[in-house]
Image 1 (tube, one colour):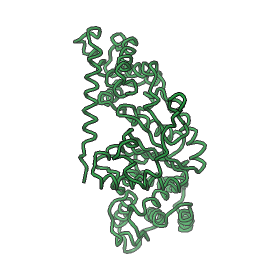
Image 2 (tube, helix red, strand yellow; image 1 turned 120 degrees about the vertical axis):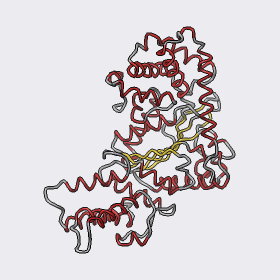
Image 3 (cartoon, helix red, strand yellow; image 1 turned 90 degrees about the vertical axis):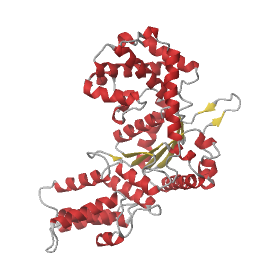
Image 4 (cartoon, one colour; image 1 turned 180 degrees about the vertical axis):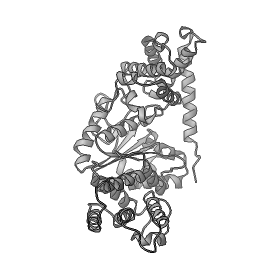
Length: 440
């Protein structure tokens, strides 16, 4: 696919570009902007998601998918692949990681991050930059916008399918703020402060109804109207030439460690998003989950209103053979059931090695051969850990670091012990991630 990078493009990296990539990989994560360098395998999932985006979502459809995998299976990486894919196909995308600062049980915080993490063809990140680009494009005409043109744009915005009147009025207020002359009692500072208030409102920031009333905006963003606001955002994006909106929500599993009241609030918001997608157009949501979200008594099944909507997701058992049947067009993307093949792991290792070589200006291939990469993969398979891409990445980077420093010959290293050290690091990361540090 066109958004994937080739070995030739890796060769074009400079040392100062390669080194921060290695620093991120050393921590077990792939830098978002370099995801195509490390995309190997799982072609079927990518192919069918790409087809859905182009031939269903872009034609007015809406869908929810769950990306299931255990820790280290590559869920975040796969979601980053989807982000690159969707952007390359002309969608706007928002990738939100659910954390202590962005807890799923507080929907206003989630919505705020959805609009602040928005990406598209505009420069920068977030709805503020989207709106700036829109206004700048309108300002590029040879003559200033007339009152009649502003009125025509305002009418068009109000009549967009799915557009909420408050969202439309805030857009119109931005238009007037940018293109109408100052009134006698208005200063430039007044105009600047009004623009900042409107942009703050679009970012779901706190504002009083009294402050918003002059712009004919009568609601702040909250859980009740968030569905309307998301639909309005998507409506505006469509008007700006985007094919739709793709929303990626990562690390939903952190909610399992929270109290029952927090979990219920979180699952209610998941249900809200699913319901929204069922009534929306040009909209695709992806949730990243671990198996426990579907299996644990503290998972989705603990909240009936959500469980009734998602209980059918998953693979169907093939009774005669006992095998799992994968439905690549279904709502469950099961990464654990579709691990990378050995040759794909080796290809990934080669790319890691190549970037490490560029970063530190040394002959990495002479010390860490393809044979060693294959041995790392085989050891992982023997331990029943073949699906854990993050573990393989950690192993390869650690091995390359040791080889580049030259203090311990690679042939003298115990690779079985090497995998245990890397696995212990990952287990610690897993424990830290599940600690209930935002249970409030």
